[in-house]
Length: 143
Image (cartoon, rainbow, N blue to C red; front, side, top):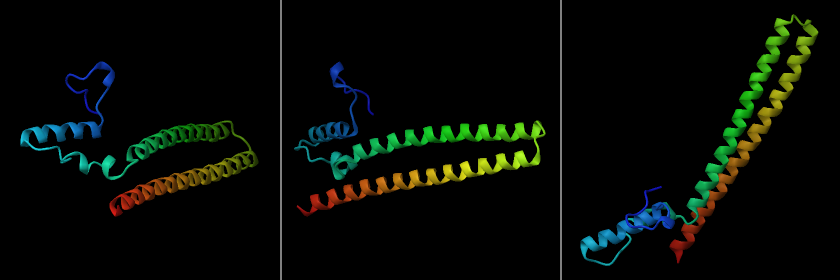
């Protein structure tokens, strides 16, 4: 985000990329002594691909979810390592250690498959968003 425009009111907030490009279009037109022709704004993704800002926001929200999931997995891994150290330190019988290891391995596979499924869902959602943006661009250029 850019800094607020000079002279902008406090309620106007920060200037987004499209607003900054429009301001540059106007300044360039004044400099050249012509009408604004979109020299800066027409190359922005927000203009070329309507909905790109919403798609970027959705990707950022998914990234927050992925980071939270990674933190949970790291905590689980730490707990599992602690379980294995405790079993070894306490001198548990071989059968008890084997049972605990089997249980941990089963949970590992379930977590791995769940994570892979979540990643596949995220990738499919991203592909759908990108296809929709391309479709909007194609229909806009056909008109």
